[in-house]
Each structure stands twice: as C-alpha cells, then as structure tokens.
Image (tube, rainbow over all chains, first blue to last red; front, side, top):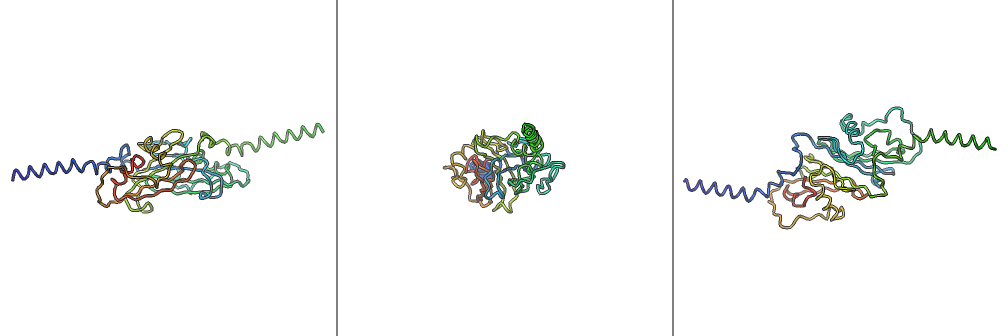
Length: 143
Length: 143
C-alpha cells in the first residue's frame, strides 16, 4: 500500500511536470493585469473625412487606455479619460462644449471608437458636419 | 481706389481674425503625427472565453501601436509588432508556431483585433478551441 501511494505520488508529479507547461500559458498571461483588480479598458479612436466609417479612410488613429492610468498615443489621454469617465463611457452622451461656434460648411468627418470600456465592448461611430463640430465635443476627439 | 484697397485689406484681416479660430481647430490637431509621415496604426486586442465576440465578455483588452515605435498596454508590444509586420497586418495569415502541442479540451476563447493597420481598417475575430491554441499563435495574442 505504501509503495502504491509512492507510485501514485510520483505519477502525479510527473503528470504535473508534463502538463504544466501546456496549460500554464493560459493561466499566466505575461504582464496582464489580473481582471479581478479592474475591468479592462482599451480603446482605439479614428477620424477621417467622409460620411461613414465604411468608406472613409482613417486619417488618424490613436490608442487610449484609462486604467490603471491614462495612457496611449492619444495626445490628450488625461483629458480624454476624464471626459469618458464623466459620461460613464457612453459616447452617445457626448455634448458639444457651450460657446463654441462652428461654420456650417459641410465637409463631413467621421469618428469611430472601438474596443472595451470597463469590461464592456464599445462600437461607436459618429459623423460631424465638419472638423470644427467634431472638435467642439472636447478632448476625446482632440487627436 | 487707394481707400477701397485699404478697406478691402482691413476687411480681409478682420475676416481672418474672426474665422481663423473657427477653422484653426480643424487644421492643428494637437500632437497628432502628420499623416504624410506614416499611415496610422493603432489597434485594440481583446480576449475572452466564449465562442464568439458578440456574446463573450472581454476578459482582457490591450492597446497596441506599431508606428513610430511599438507601444501600448500590450505586454509584448515589440514582438507583437514584429509579428504583425511579418504578415503585413493580415491576421488571417497567422499560423501556429511549429512544435507546440495543445490539449484538445474544448474551452473556446475568442480574440478580436480592431482598429487601423497602416491606414487600413482592421476587424478580425477568431475563435480557438482553448487558450493553449490561441497562445500557440505567438506574441500577438500573448497578453
């Protein structure tokens, strides 16, 4: 019986050594933040001239991450994250800043925001009459 | 005639002073790289358990930018960018690394890659039988 137990233990250790590397990669995502700490937020924003994203060439595209800190190639990541946090990530709630006057010239620009905000997928597209109207929405589109 | 020219010049300057701030915002995108230097590349990658992105909760999400340098919250941005450059951004061309053996256990994970690669929109989704199979694709999904 003692021998059987010893064999079982040895087999168990061997199995762990062999199978460990196979399954380990799935568990230990290198450098990734444990999802229990905070829900992931990672976005990519684009802007381009045109009336819809399907046909407009993205002229600029930036990344934005707001957790644990504001980062990304977005040139005003801090302001963009503050604005997104203020509207709870609901881009449809964006409003133009008061007191900004834009020409009515029609030269449409389309912006997209894709990715994940606090664990939920984001797929946002909006077309503005011109770049001034887009910029009036604040820091989130200032890239 | 001289007076008329002076008036015209004065009116022109006034118009520029009034209209300048309106259109200026469209021209001077703060901090954005001139699109003539390189086409934009900015991606957001997600992974989650499930068979398709529409129903799977994104458990991890990272940003990745490969121009002018590899950056983002992707923990292996350098390798991911090198891999993407090697396949010209065509994620459908990804192949599993040779010599990697995975269990056949079915516990599907779905990955998405969205954004812009060298000026072209990217919308990629792929489902793997388990996390080991996903990880066998290399650094791009190692987050």
